[in-house]
Amino acid sequence: RRALASPAGSTIASLLLMLSFAVLGASTALLAGASAPAGANGVVRPRAAVLLAEAAATTDEQKASGISWDSHQYVDQAPESLIRDDDLQGANQDMRRRFEENCRRAQNAICKAVSELDGAEFREDVWTRPGGGGGISRVLCNGNVFEKAGCSLSVVYGSMPQDALQSATSRGADRAKGYAPGERVPFFACGLSSVMHPRNPMAPTMHFNYRYFETDGGVWWFGGGSDITPAYLFEEDIAHFHQTYKDVCDTHDPEYYARFKKWADEYFTIKHRGETRGLGGIFFDDQNDRDPEAIFAFSKECLDSVVPAYLPLVAKHKDDSFTQQQKEWQLMRRGRYVEFNLVYDRGTVFGLKTGGRIESILMSLPETARWEYSHEPAAGSPEAEIMDAFKTPREWAK
Image 1 (tube, rainbow, N blue to C red):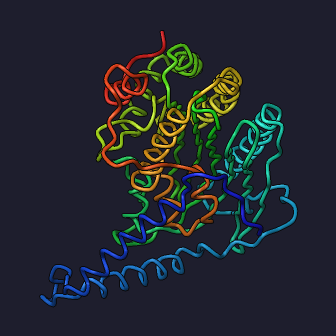
Image 2 (cartoon, helix red, strand yellow):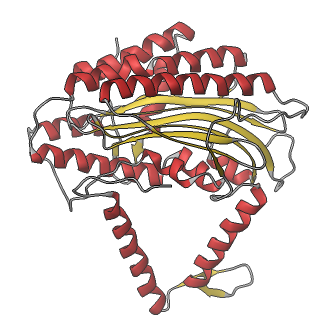
């Protein structure tokens, strides 16, 4: 697979360099005799032993799950379906197939609209796995409008320890029903996720993800959401994005928007910064409180709203003039985006714990980002204005 070119400037390589310094610091601590806490037998193990044990545990976990980071096989053309034929009692094969079909339909429509706006085409990678499932990743890099835009479909069959399954869902949600404590939980998951990073700092970044899960124990749920991350505040743009999704929510349940908007504000908080990643949207998870057909219809309409909610904002600002300082601010906000995705994002955690394809898991990261030491925007500046919105979530829709 050919490497993707990165434009000049600060790149994600900067992040890798930072991680290298972190590793170097850890190595220094090892040489200084740093140790892990005493285990159950009272033996204190050197930190190096702990790190090696954790790496081995990750490898063992992937073997046990039946999938790993390198277990996918590239194919030239996507099969008609990535869903395998299961005769498991309680498996909703019809919903599995229709959810995948809808994700593929939406992927085609969204990528077509983005390509028409940008003038460049998406690269496509298709892969399958021996045990069933696979994915279709489409990425547009170094475009005219978008520095990077990705839209990825994944179908996953595997098994997870109950604690790992819990980390991929909301707290308090019991997804291991029917399994004894400590028993692995076989699961199915299908989802479509996307992140769009425009070049122009006046045009916002956008993310969405819509997914469907089942366990072999017969438990099912839906999750998803769409959210917007601007570097500069244009209130009418944010109101348009939120109003589009409020209208969708109101069609299906008048309580949805207030609930899912608050959920997004809380979920996309960068706790170690005391601010949100962006200006929200909607977010929901563990939804199985009504007929699955009703939730599927809601998820479908949310996906159909991605283009009208977002692309007009990019078209509006793609040719705006900007300064080098404004570009650097955009890159700093992308740095915050990276921090959230690598530290808190539930989908990233799920992908890494289940041995997902690394290029697809990290597709959401921008090609360029920036970390400036102890940066504070000047009082009264446009940067300070949007920082206030990041620290104090607002109401945008009517």
